[in-house]
Amino acid sequence: MIQRIQSIYLFLASVISGGLIFVFNLWENLKNKVFAFDLLSAESLSLKIIPILFLVSATLSLIAIFLFKNRKLQFVIGRLAILVNLILLGLSVYVSLTLPGGINISENGIGMFIPILAILLLVLANKAIKKDEDLVKSVDRLR
Image 1 (cartoon, rainbow, N blue to C red):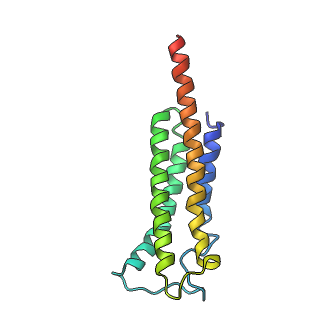
Image 2: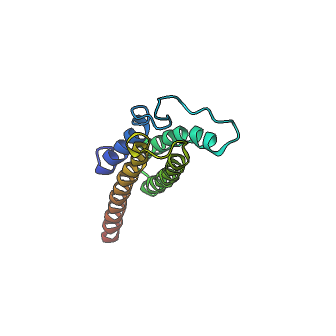
Image 3: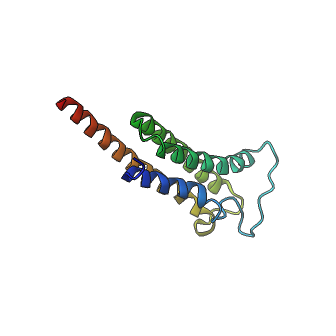
């Protein structure tokens, strides 16, 4: 049953996490040049992890769509995707606060709103999954 509302929420979260990272310049400075950090710095490591975490979040959301027969596992994967987005949000805030030249919310901070929107959609999907699970449990009690 892919046509449920949680599938729509999960698909939108997947599109937002996986698609919008290519639209917004999340890890570039104001002169549109990628920062050249040394390989061992925390900024370089977090700049390499951020796109990977966006794609992991998108993949988890996409996988959760097709787990409609196992609602408990779908719920757990939704929570895992929320956790990945929370880590991503923390990394985005950290990177924006440690960028040289200060923080410019209009240029560098737009990427911080993508995980927030994905978290919102994943929470709505998990609420709908929980609602379906409760409905199935109530019908099983009547049998």
